[in-house]
View 1 (cartoon, rainbow, N blue to C red):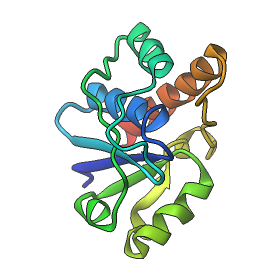
View 2 (tube, helix red, strand yellow):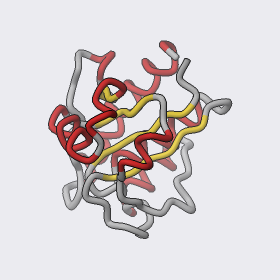
View 3 (cartoon, one colour):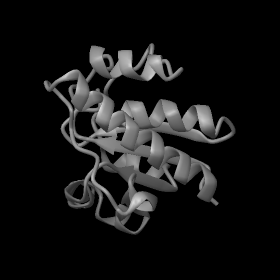
View 4 (cartoon, rainbow, N blue to C red):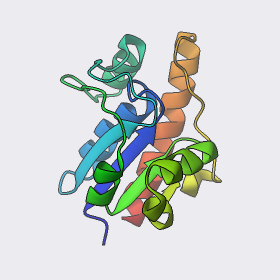
Length: 142
């Protein structure tokens, strides 16, 4: 089924690494990674995102943001995006990936997960709560 899962957001420093590392903890037998459609290439996870994740027992230490490419898309069985608009962004980069691209929030009412970048700690906590709920739902489906 889905052995290789890619989590995508914009900068690849807040939401997608949170989703990546959370899914890795829930699905340790799967290959899970992340990338961004407008990545801040080489940057570590955002400090607030890393702090909130760590408070939930998830370490994002060693994360380096990377840009989504068509080649990366081809490597994965399932691509999970944070917002409906990201589906179009992925499709522009790799049209052939459209059929395997779904919302991270698919199983929680097809919710978009808002970008907390440069916002309050509460925004990071809210985004993380949605990511956690979504990851749990995906773990049950996969």
